[in-house]
Length: 319
Image 1 (cartoon, rainbow, N blue to C red):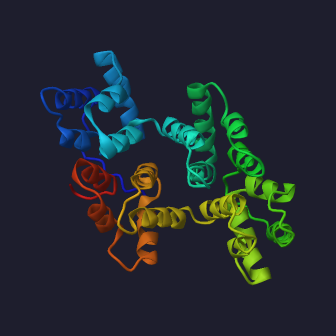
Image 2: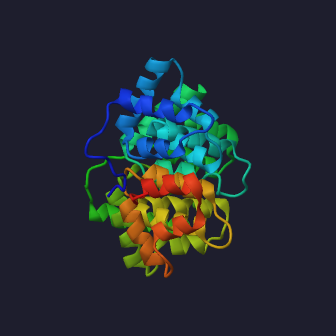
């Protein structure tokens, strides 16, 4: 369900590096060539380009992109050019260093912890240690206070079984434990943290379904009744990312282009991080929750120039 489109004949990494270097030379930068090359290469191919560029020119492609580009276009291209685990590790670090109030700055951590494969999350954690000389868990512990710290550490520490295995009696039992925690407003108790952080996603989706069947309302609806604080918001966000990542990211995209202004950070992050995973499915969910134009048109209307061309390329559109 990816939207990334690759050409039938892909040049060698050396040829791509030569094209990029040519685009950098002269008085101006040939931004369209950068879009044409990097916007049509998958993660493995982009890694080969980065390595070949370092070998050919003895300098970093990321550094040259930083010096040649600017603004939202630069941010999007660099985020895309990083190896995905390094990209997400940097996003987590940026979130933990953010001064934004509420959960807005922490949303990306929940997304990476709950909407990634176990292998990808493990790779992100390794990359984080390599880049920042400490673990994600350490930085969360130093940056975040209880009870959010307990939940976030649990989520990023998880390594979920990724096969489709579901036990209905366990799903009903977990639903009962979650319901009791919500009724007593003990949302950070050990049962809640264990269930959300240890169960595989298929088991959790069964538990959420059992919850709704047994208690007449969805679990996120009942959590909302506990209040609108940071803990409630983080738990609802984790449940959405586990239950239906495509729906969650469709909502993120809708919010990013809603109204007069554009949230370029959320728009860029969502398109860049999901283009090789499920962005086509996200597009379908977006169309279900909005009566306005489709996702492609919404992005085209809210962006401009090379930034628009790059995002539209990742969406699979002809630019």
